[in-house]
Amino acid sequence: MTPSGTRRQLSTADERKRTVLQTAVSAFADRGYFGTTTTDVAKRAGISQAYVYRLFPDKEALFVAVVEHCFALIRDSLSDGAAAAGGSAPEEVLRAMGDAYAQLIADRNLLLLQLHAQCAAAAEPAIREAVRAGYARLVEYVRGVSGAAEPDIQRFFATGMLCHLVVAIDADQVEAPWARALSEGLRHY
Amino acid sequence: MTPSGTRRQLSTADERKRTVLQTAVSAFADRGYFGTTTTDVAKRAGISQAYVYRLFPDKEALFVAVVEHCFALIRDSLSDGAAAAGGSAPEEVLRAMGDAYAQLIADRNLLLLQLHAQCAAAAEPAIREAVRAGYARLVEYVRGVSGAAEPDIQRFFATGMLCHLVVAIDADQVEAPWARALSEGLRHY
DNA sequence: CGAGTGTGTGAGTGGTCTATTACTCACATG
DNA sequence: CATGTGAGTAATAGACCACTCACACACTCG
Picture 1: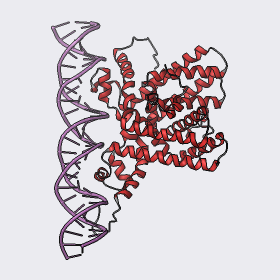
Picture 2: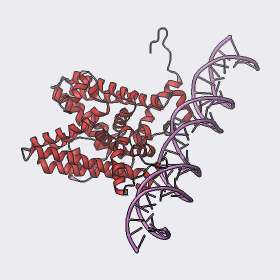
Picture 3: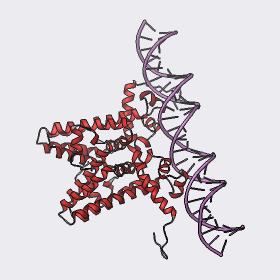
Picture 4: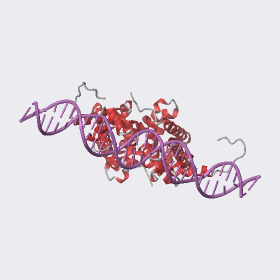
């Protein structure tokens, strides 16, 4: 992280690492940290299972890297939303960012991974630290860019958590009042 | 094990089933559906792993039963809250029920299991059905007993999901503005 | 008492998982 | 061409896991 001399081109291993991170998102999104095997990850990345262990020290480190990658993607998404709102009132910025987050529902993978990360955070300290750090940055970013009051920020994240539920149980596919009560207004495109 | 000479008290299968369900909550609360072994469940219930399979057809059926058990407990909790509010205005009933739910944070296990159920719901259809049915009854109950408007009901459940996050990453233990922004006002005793 | 029924377990089976090791191959450079 | 290095893998060790089955023990009732 501190190149004290000349800058080097990205090595092939780094490129490979990046593609593994990207494909691992959908692998872990299916069945979570404990339910996903390193073979699953390897298959989706098109490499051998053994090579996963050359790129990452162990399964936990791989998962942590995937989680951090996802938090970065989500920050980007919120950032896009905030840019679209362009310095409006706090409520408007929050609305725009919420809209941006809700768009991620279409993908499913990203939100499901957030949910699985949350679950794994309860069990594994290293993952918990990563998730805490992710939310720390996210909350501070939202507070900073929107300037919204604390209760509004809290509600913003509560709505995000509701999105996770809606995606996990596929509430959209259920034609019933209860399902509509949960997912109404959480736009997804 | 089982030193000869000590007396053994047999319980009926139904009683045993009930104690297994109760202890299995904390077992699954730790590491979720995929991360928890049937041996873990058996140990906590004080029975052999083989006997788990006499009481439940397989691991999935056991987990579904545990999930249903938890939803029942949560309904009871909300019911207590509603009773305490005793026919006040919808907002007051919601507040009382939210308070009752927040009290469950002290236990941790119940909320964590809700979270893990949500995760497993994304992967296993049978579990998804159970979680859907659980939320269906919960939403209908809340709507019925509070008479609140749809957006308030939605916010009610969104707040519940936020509780899950706070418990999963133990945000209370973090002394930082972002952690306080998330958990502020979610009372837990 | 003795036969029957339900509670409970020890000892597996076959499969799968993480992680390691020893190896091959592609390719760059002198 | 010889040599070195990093990309990539096949094979496997060692530990578990879900699930099964034959059997033992406790209790009940004729």
